[in-house]
Length: 227
Image (cartoon, rainbow, N blue to C red):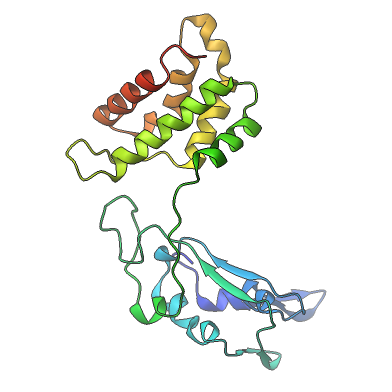
């Protein structure tokens, strides 16, 4: 769905195999059930999509057949069970926050064809469960406090106050931090704090100095000397 991708690329492509010209179905007709195995066609980061790809989806989003011109005319009807889903970070309004470079404001006619769902961060119970599975070597108390750090960072990110920061801690970043805490546990022998050392490499080396200091202060307050 990004630069260089055309709608035709979702439909399939022609290949020459042992001298024969064959058409191979792409992800969209496969999800529609052209082989009688319908699925979900997921458009990830749809707010990065170019207009040509988006416009080509209109008829399919209305539940109408897809017409391919490969070996003759191939009309593919959506099989029961076929769905289209999409994800995005900007409510399809473009990068108004300047956090998601490359996001494009999407056509209202396109967005009107979707049911909208707002996805919040996972609950503390869910994220603590993920942490326990990924990094059982860490103490339960440390894992819980790491999740509390993530929650505090998210509040600052979403804040309208002057103290707001321009980076959040996603579940992905939180799990990466935990994994690196285990990996760099040996730095304690060098007089360094493993969870701070790991946090630099998981998140903070990609931030400005003031943001790094703000997050470091949160970590020291939430975690302290817990190992």
